[in-house]
Every structure is written in structure tokens, then in C-alpha cells.
Length: 400
Image (cartoon, rainbow, N blue to C red; front, side, top):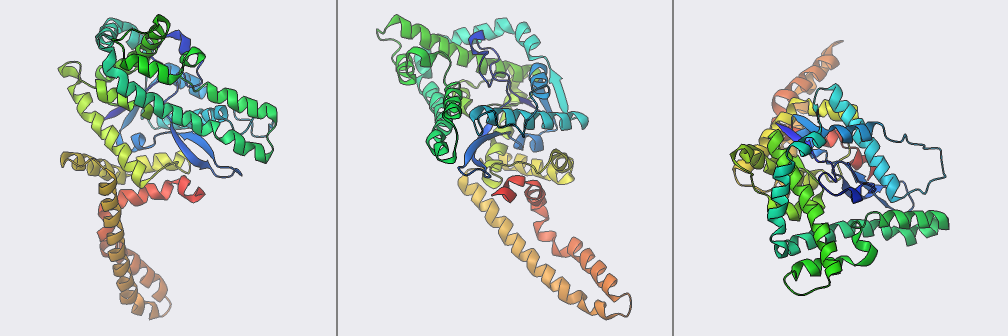
């Protein structure tokens, strides 16, 4: 099964072209990842769950080119403000480019021209947007939730400015950070009106309101609706689920619907992407593989197939991987680990006499112990072997 990595801004108006996130893949925020700094600084990272749960990844050609031809890291330069939001974006882009190259070498990357698909499906897209815009008040709650989530991300960067002043950043660097966090605002909306005014206008659409703010609210909402509808159409075209920025989820929950029977398979497999993310968020928060080589080794390991089957079977049973269910999984893993530990102790004692055989005793003992551990002692944890595989390559845990 394939998965689509969305390309931010597709379907939106050209006014968003200057956004540092334009044509970027979905990224997630980890506030404690930059642990080498005096003050913890947020960083963006990729959703590595998708690389383990799906056979191949579909990426926009333009997004791929932007990533692999990006600005090289100048680790010796102190001229740019570090840490800053823009550096976090660049770091994520470099990480993304490395992952794409590794996927391409392994044959797990599919490049598609999203612009071509958009041109071909433009009439369908416009119809979907027009239908959604005919019910503007219904989007009030979901647009409020989406904007609030993104505002909280922006504020996490902005809130670091005061803390960073204590570790020696110049006024110029502070100003750079401040300006860059403003780039994360909701487009032109922040130029004249607050997000609260925009949200209020949408929710009170049928009441008399200033024309200027109504035009701006409609323009903002159209951009959001164009973007999510394009991704839904893209999913149907590729017959594959997609992964997107988490702040867009409230809009998808309001709008997610199969556009005809041809999209049924894509919509059904969408829950695999969403629920596997929940599982990873609980068991492997802020998963960052130690290296791309280690990541590809794990993806190609047969234990990853066991992980996919585990998730699919859980979904068939109606499990959602909420907090309680994930806690139960961890409790079961710990219980089985204790049982395996007891068995390994028994194996050690049982094979101890072999070590007294003259000359060859120690090799025979170690060989017998390893064989018995593989066939019997480690049997209890075999069902969750995928957990130990991913835990082994998770570099974020070593950094914590």
C-alpha cells in the first residue's frame, strides 16, 4: 500500500507563495528536540510512522526538487540567528531530503506531478470548493480549531525570544526570530484583522458585518477549502491515503467524504495512516531514527510486516489506539519482557555445566545458550518484536 505526503499550499492562491512552508511536506513539532541548547528550542520533524506502515511513499515532483536542491547546512557560520524558526524549517527540509534519497535508492519513492493532477482535476476542485463555500457558517468551529492549533505552534517559537535573550543573542537576532515567527501567521489575515475577528465573521456569516472583513474571511476559508479538497481529490486519483499537517485535521473531519466509489479504498485505508500515527505518538514520541541507513534497514526488516499486521488487526477489532489502549500495549510488553527474562535466567543456569567441558566448554555453552534463547527464552516477546526493532533505531531516546 502507498501513502501520499501532501505538499503544503497546493490549491491555495498565489499570495501564499512566500510562506516558508510552501511545498513543504507535513512536519510535526517537538519542543524538546534541541536538547543541546541552554534553553530547549522547538524543532520540526517528519512523521516517521508512515515510512513503517506503508510500502511506498508518493511525493510531488516540485516538493522533491525543492527539498533535494535546498540550501546546504553551514554549521560553521554564526551569521544567521540560531536557533530560529527558519533554521528549524531548514533542518527539517534537510532531514526530509535525506529520507527521500534513501527511499528512492530502495525503490520505495514514487514521484508524481501534483501540478499536472491539479490542472486536470480543476473543474472537480472548483465544484467542491463552491459546494463548501455555500455553507460558510458550518466551518466556524473547525476553522477556529485549525487556526488555534497553528497559533499555538507559532507561539511556542515566539515565547522563546525572552528566554533566548539570557543566553547572548543580539538584538538583530531577536528581531530576526520575531519576524520569522510572524511568517507563521495566517497569511494576509494578520495585516488588518485578528484571527478572532475572522473566526467570528465566519461563525456569524448570516448577520450584517463589514464588507472588508467578510471578503478577507471568505478568501481565507477558500484557501483552506481548496487545499484540503485538492488533497482529497489527489487521494482518489492515486487510490492512496495521505498524511497532512495536524492542524488541518479539524477541517478534514468536517469535510472527509469519498467522492464516488473509486475513492472508497483510499478513504478506508486513511484510518491506517491516522491510527498508526496515534500508536507511534504514544509508543515512540518524537521518533527520529539514528540514521537513514538504520531507518531503511528497519523498514525492510520482516518485523515491520508484523507491525503492519498488528495495526490492521487492531483496526479490524475496532481499536483506536487511545491513551488507555496504548498503555495496555506497553503493560503487556513489560509483562512479556519479565517472562522472557525469567526464561533467559533458566537457560543460563541450564547451560552452565557445558562450560566445564575442557577446551571447548565455553563456546559450546554460549552457542547452546544463544540457540535456546532464540527458540524458547525470547518466545514471549516475539509478538512485539517490531517494538524492539523501532526502539533500537530511535535516536531521540538516546538524546533525552
